Image (cartoon, rainbow, N blue to C red; front, top):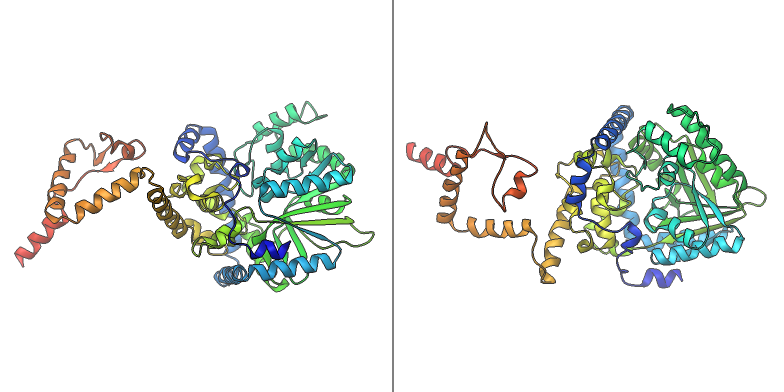
Length: 490
């Protein structure tokens, strides 16, 4: 199975529905911007995380060298991904685990559902996992009559609130304490009606609720932060201890892992265990780092299944520029520094992967034309690259996807985007010196409607610009005028 899987050409893009569908980012962003409470919640949370991260990163003298090492390990791994995955499969199998290969979301969901049913259980506990959110596992299990219980506190808040995550690290970042209290009172069985919105009380209420699930569940489903090919070791890092409970108490453990999460050796893991906690939670190390290799008689789960998920990843790997997005270690540092994400939140992206990395990864996984507006959900300011612990050049990837979108629209004879039309007209005008000179001088008429150095309203199609930002007042003379005058005086 694995040899066939890896030997095939790049697979079709990921199941778009499994990535929560697509939407028009500008329209969704406008809706989010109207929610002042949302902007306050996200602004306060991201500022706190940024400050914590800056403090712990400043303590590391060789931080940039670590970033370069993390970047180079990922690049080398992607170049020989098939070899590393086969070594991982062999090592896991030798240690008593079973490896399954899933081409897409539907296949992965079918495998998990069949494995759970084989145990006779009708419920599972889950460790926070972006991969299972990507494939819509909870929904697939529900259709099969299996209840999936999120055990991460933020994921539990999202689940009980019938909501969707809006952040990679802090899925409930868009909720404040008062909102969380209301969700618990409304949805959590047996909760104290006098529950306050104190963080400790909220956490204790969640702990009491989850303890019963931990002690009765026979099956757990996890994601994976890394998997070491040399030893078949799967790694999960987390801060609450819920992961440790899920990974040790149930009899059956099922891990769903994107194929890009494999790393060659334990020495490589050393690099990422320094980069990840500082970049994600602003901690020097993870409170809980769980590792396991296959099964051990009488200790922990006695059945271990590792599902290696493609779902569009080999298609991304085939893109020589875009494959860099597969280096992502899901730390969320790019979200916390992004001025666009800070104002719109994660739901506006229409994907389980929000923020700058989501604006790249989602179109790559699903196909650019299925998410044509996401590559434009950025100012290209470069803050995401500066924050990324593995130095993913997100701004360049966004520009790459914008160009690809334009090319695909032309190939399919679709109407060009407004930006593409504007750039075509600009190119035509700038290639004709006399017309360009006339146009720049005519633009001075904009001074007639400027107020205090700004033009706040322009007629269509230029109104698309001024509905969201002001245009600067045109100068009294152009660069061409200055150049001609300077040359004349000399």
